[in-house]
Image (cartoon, rainbow, N blue to C red; front, side, top):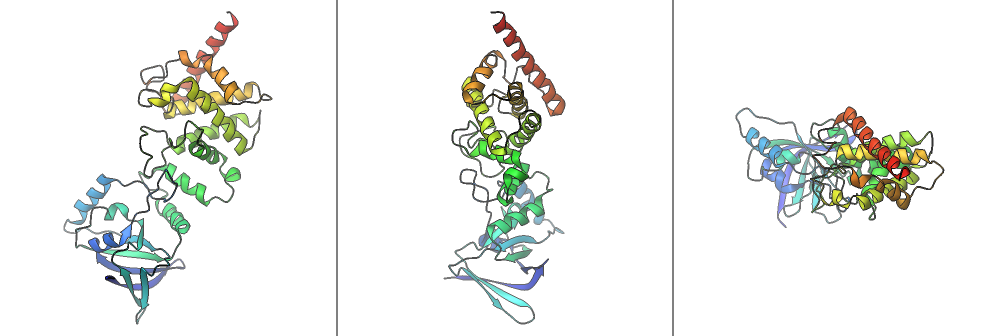
Length: 338
């Protein structure tokens, strides 16, 4: 085994043990990995890699006078002896690591290190010592919670992993995750979390979009037809089953239709609330939603060139809801009049 040796200062960050040191960028790159969220398996927590972001930093760090704050890592616990710390005098320590193993998890530096595998430029680093993955995720969220460009859906996903009672604390998030994870849902693996996407799906709505729309559904239905988060998740699952059954092309060709875009998701969640509130005592399942939705939806133009084109923001959602309600009202009158 060939070892890499980094000499560090032992210290603490708010009570957590850390190592502080300096090393060439290419060494830190070789010793570390980014635990990017795999949306298929749910493992990992980092946002997907941005080549442009990383290239920008590569160009910057090679300029005269450039600098950076310390790169943040974590030495995860391991049982294979891939790394060990050897205490030295005066609060120093030597990190001895197997050169064939990436022992540093990149908590806050994946884009800075991404394209530095060949650079000798020295960089400062700080590494936590033996935090587990859950603790890493929490630290990542705290550090990056306000970061520009960081997907809010990714932070919501982190919250879901950290909540002790998701149904009570974030019922709308429970609903959105149920729609994403339930194999029978039209949204199965179709909600963008901000990690490595599931292959074959394009222009997907985000977890945050569906979560916010579900929150409106809960607020609208609670006074008339209160239901537990799990029950609401099943109701909305059945509603979207109906939408997918009535408008299959809209799900098959999301680039051409607005049903699965923000404006469509918000407006259709409002429609789901309308249907539930109209008959609160009725059992609303995929069959009843399909019959209700199918009375008008096929004749409404859901395309990107239709009446919903260009609508956005809260005002746009209100206008979209009114357009859909009016189309439904006209269809009902037509049926009533034969």
